[in-house]
Image (spheres, rainbow, N blue to C red):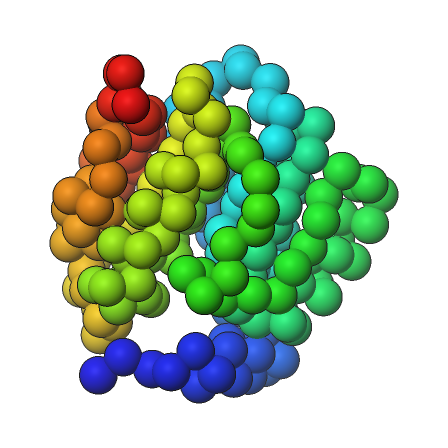
Length: 194
């Protein structure tokens, strides 16, 4: 059964209130390696406007801020947003918003949308909506980067299913795909002529 958005927010607020780094994002080799893989996938490109969905405490956001002139960083948890805003207080280029996708999607166009370890927390229907919203908001030469844990979970869908649903929902083209022991990374572009 899928949680109502208010239940999801309450669950993540409690998680971050109990532990500001619930997944050891700052200290684990897995997380450090994954951040390096994300940055490598994005390459040397400079982005004008980026959207990061599921920013948590801002560890990846901090690295992305070096690549983008402007970032909109979303998280369902108000506690996570508070932590991320404190962490990145020196960056005027990052706007933090506590919101749930797909119910909220920021206005405007982005030349990169990052969804790192967030899709499988959504229902199948929500993943379809998020894919369509991302596709509509990515510029013609923009990118969408998905990172998904592929181990077992007790969430609405697993990482591989989340990617399949996302790809089936809009005309995406896979530009790069990388599969590691515990996660997969899929760099998507809009289908040419779309």
